[in-house]
Amino acid sequence: MDLGLKGKKAFVGGSSRGLGFATARILAEEGCQVVLNGRDSEKLAQAVSKISSDTGEKAFSVVGDAADPDQPKKLIQEAAGILGGLDLIVTNTGGPPAGEFESFDEKTWQRAIDLAFMSHVRIINNALPYLKESSHASVVTVTSYSVKQPIPNLVLSNSIRSATIGLTKTLALELGSEGIRFNSILPGWTETERVVEIMQHKAEVNKSTVEEEIKKITAASPLGRMGTPDEIGRAAVFLLSPAASYITGVMLTVDGGMYKGTM
Ligand SMILES: NC(=O)c1ccc[n+]([C@@H]2O[C@H](COP(=O)([O-])OP(=O)(O)OC[C@H]3O[C@@H](n4cnc5c(N)ncnc54)[C@H](OP(=O)(O)O)[C@@H]3O)[C@@H](O)[C@H]2O)c1
Image (cartoon, rainbow, N blue to C red; front, side):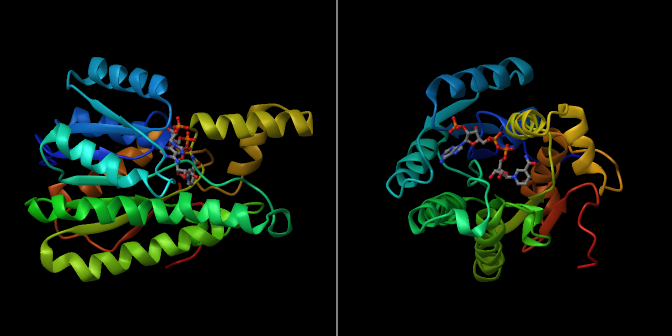
């Protein structure tokens, strides 16, 4: 099946590593022109060069913190300037800190809201004029399966990401008539660098191994393992692509069956 992505212009947030990087690399493999984003210019330069050498497509980057209220406008304008427009947007950043309800003060909640919710609002808001000019506009927000089944010790993520789901569905309803599709990817546990770091920390605390910690988490998974970044990236790229032209307002859980509900 041809996904129809050749020549499409894409901005992928939080893409110097992890799920964002995998999504950007697969988009480039499909012939898209991709602009990556992250806060660290050196890490971004390495990611851009890896994508270019892996895929033969020239990739680009814009540096900036998507959680900073003033940055998304600059990031999107720069990305659109580099590519001469935008067709595809992936809103993604790192996650808010782990912890239980009583461990967070008001300031931490506000920072987490800027990171895990307002970054999506601001990126999409600034990208809309370009998306309205595109004949194949599509947006994927990256959230988490925790909006369906809260994950212990992640109260910030469990709470705030639900707002991004509400945003994604509302935009699908409001802007479908403009030909812009909005969907969300809800990843389950996926073996990115960040998750490996978390498992290393757990192993130190519990005096166990990374493999043992991963086994504990994946015991509840029908597939018995974590996902790979590419497995999340391929789902996101399909939703972004013209091959998914009749899919909008969908919250796609990509978690190896970890979520046990039927809806
Ligand atoms: N991996 C999983 O199992 C999983 C499951 C469910 C949901 N998620 C969520 O999916 C998202 C991606 O996860 P991941 O595992 O790929 O994370 P990751 O490995 O930490 O990668 C995050 C990427 O985003 C960039 N980034 C972080 N904060 C940013 C900001 N404020 N502005 C711009 N770029 C930023 C990072 O680069 P810099 O740090 O250099 O900026 C990095 O490139 C996170 O929100 C995570 O909570 C992950």
